[in-house]
Image 1 (tube, rainbow, N blue to C red):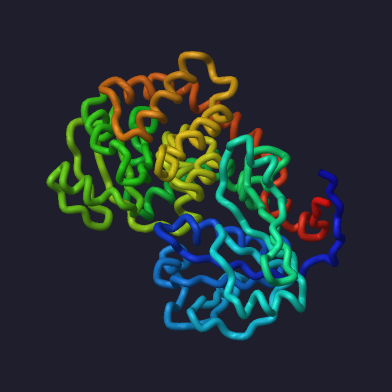
Image 2 (cartoon, one colour; image 1 turned 45 degrees about the vertical axis):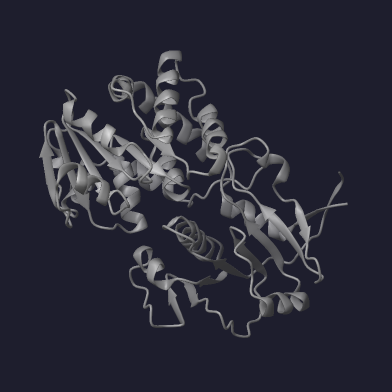
Length: 391
């Protein structure tokens, strides 16, 4: 198929539409992208969000009583059923197929902005062929482009702020910065003894075999500090340990110390990932941030019917473990499969623990390799200046 370019004037404004389906993944991605486009590309950004109460967890200064407000150079608009008259921006991003209001679509026919549907991230090879494909609106003279984030040069890339890697490295090289970080969530003992205590962040869907993992931590030879950033695991853990979890509370059983961590801002969560020795993450936003942390990670994809999430997991593991020595590669793959299938075998954790030094080297190498690629925001802005059309 031949493709032609339609050169546009440099975009100056961007509207992002976000419906929060569940959890914080949708708004997490949209908020990071909105901030980056405003700060690094000087675009005028409007972020339309339907659920301000949930969004406030990630944007603490958000006033949920206001219809419009500006936070960190981004105008945030409460997206309600009665959508007000609005002149579309130069770029319109429909995040995760959230469907734009009819009145806004009508207004787009006059302006003809670059219209993107920002898709979910996947490492699967088919993404290369579908990125930047178009869809004509069935009744209006509008063309939508599918913008697929991804791990190859033929996709939309990964969300990564310009200064992110430099900031991470500075943090990880500074004992003082890490000590200051651990003081804030009231975990000062996380820095002592540095070489013996394994620090793990645990963020997972409730379907994960969390109690199997915690049982393994309890009986392991190495002391483990497992940190629980606010997530949906609390009920499972309370029942298993007969423990009433409250903010900053902790419990020690065997060689496991389990501590609740208050809900963190995106910046603070990044630092938690940078500071831990191993990160359990899920979905999309925390997945990518764990990659940029350059630390060993266990990813749990969102569970789908007919096991559709497993090809996504396998595609990512092919990339993540490429070049990892044979036995370590098998251990990583086996643990991920077990974590996503809901049951860990007795020795799964011990094997991962034994191979952590090799996995740490691999994680740093993987992060460094991806960081060399052009990031998502850069590719998005470049594409909108010269969108391509198949003919």
